[in-house]
Image 1 (cartoon, rainbow, N blue to C red):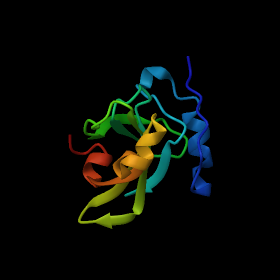
Image 2 (cartoon, one colour; image 1 turned 90 degrees about the vertical axis):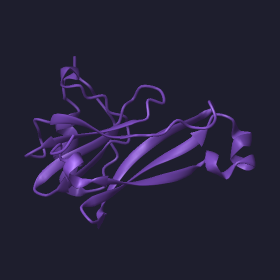
Image 3 (cartoon, one colour; image 1 turned 90 degrees about the horizontal axis):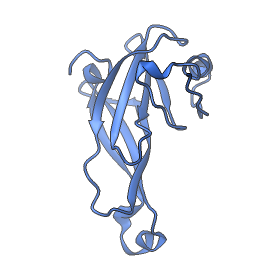
Length: 143
């Protein structure tokens, strides 16, 4: 069985990576969501994604030497803290490798609510969050 995912690309040279990931076997442990992020880091290609299980809060990376795989080294790089409201959920984890600081890369994810009124009453219910993740962890070099 193979995973197919619609991927919004941000970098033209990543088209091949998207095609390669579209046929990544489930046995690889990959569960990509539509907003999977590809980027190049220290000579490797990185795929960053959130676990597609509802509100798992897990952000993973996979590494490859080429844009077409094979993808390996599933690494949990961040576990999103529990949200204060059960109607809230997270989505759209993205790396921003253009922002690097002291060996860390900026990563963002978004929070939203199933209850539209939350967006008016609590600004925390609908906004992006930003974290710094160590490059070694992203590349699977430190666990």
